[in-house]
Length: 312
Image (cartoon, rainbow, N blue to C red; front, side, top):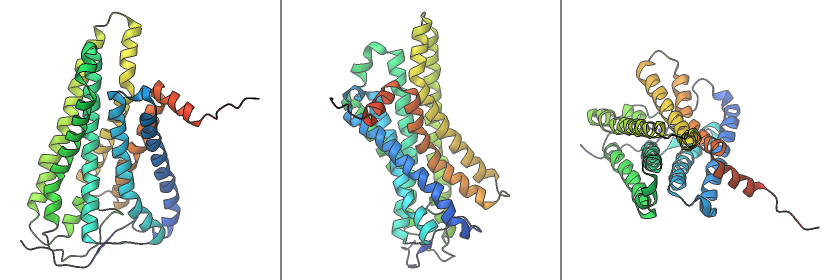
């Protein structure tokens, strides 16, 4: 297998058949991007600035916000470039790197949700050992492990993209680079690249989901054993935000997978729209969920945006 010698850049695609509406479509997308940047940026700032939020639960939330920001900042330049400026060309190296970041950060988000489930499991099932189990050092190691796992899982298929010759048309089906789009343009045996994401990557994400589900079964069992109804409600309330983020992430994953797997006769614009929902909806909703359901975050936001009182 020789290194790719084709120099023609790939061509990104906005919404096929809706070229004249690209400028109009770009405005709601821009509003979403700005909302995501402000929402997740505010979460990160609050957790860094407020010592009351220097706890494992909020450190994991900061990791989730950072992953969401990463996905947004990775896709936003090319999406707006295509829709605003009709700038469709992207070099192979830049495209492969963007695909690597997008897929890595998606797996990071799944891993962070798993880490957050572990945090809630320890806090509710082993409250007296919480601070000794989830020390700052251990939280940092978990975060590094989540990042390392995602980076290493995605690396084999991205490295192989550099080896393929691309002799077909160079038009990608989205305004950002995805591995599954790129291999469709390769004139080589891509069996490994087709099977690896399904067998390895999807299996890991599915395993995350099952472990999260099992941890909540144990949490529910522990909560049901609490005699006081008030304490029971308090314990469950600490999990509501996390459960909301889990549902938002995995429902969009299932929806996108279902459309790509069984939606062969569905209009192509539906596939593209589902991709945007997958990459934009969770980063938009996660700060909203935690802002609504977490009192410490609410108080931090109020302090951040309240004007200091001046003496008469």
